[in-house]
Length: 351
Image (cartoon, rainbow, N blue to C red; front, side, top):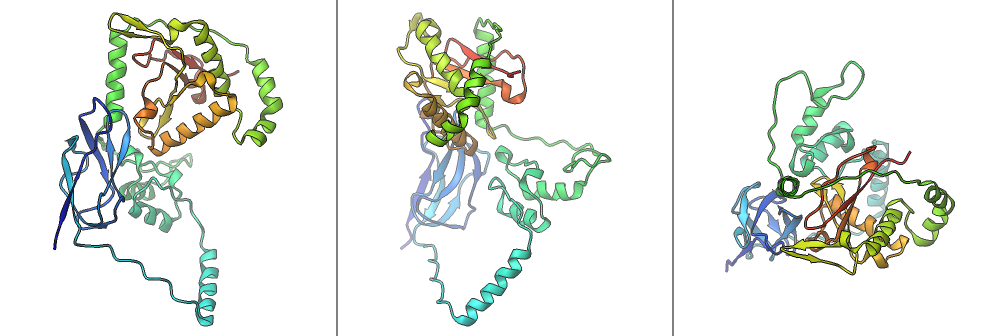
């Protein structure tokens, strides 16, 4: 007997009532498994995964890029249809083994090309066919995902007179209009709002980094061996910030109406760039962390940001933010405060 299960949009967090279907990872008629990821959902704070609650044949009710409300039904699963179970591999026979060895030799001769997971299956196949690495192709899909059209444009584009790969750019008059992700749109709106409503003051200071450079150079190999993480500069910056916030608690405060809320802890937001836009995951109680714990925490959050796996909780509630423009070669900048915080620290090039 046929039974349909409705798949609804879950709530990403408080105050979020609407999200966008960034992309479907399945199509109508596909047979999905229970807990299989079927779509990516964009909210104004993070990208989340939508999973199937049951096994069966799926029917999509809304298009990709559609704006939907939390609780809306976006797909249905017919649970009377089950996924085919994969048959167990046949036992190896001497003839079978010899054939596989011969096949393996043939495969070894074929050039192996690195193909990014951030590409559609069809795009991966075309890249592999032409021996193209994913790093060579600029993606135009959601969050920079590489599509078949991107690979075909790359193949057709050739190189310019200086031998620089053009990736299909130049020579024509075409325009490509893309819809901004919900996250990128909300970040832009929030930053403009802060600029308009906050009396911000930016000061510039130079810091003598020679002692830290010497210390890091002396102990970085031993630190990596003993702690399992690299000794970078962000751990020093973060420890310096937590000590400064202890000495000047007003900088670690927030304004709530007519009240100033002081914190006896330092939850430090670390601004990171990701394929989906600027994200600020938070290190909780950074004032109690060692250098190794800070480095491990930043590494974990940065990987999650890159892979789109950050949760709402991991990006909420910071008391102070650090942004490092030095990784882009920047010498000076005027970072924008991350509301409702009172201040932000921008670090820049070490020369």
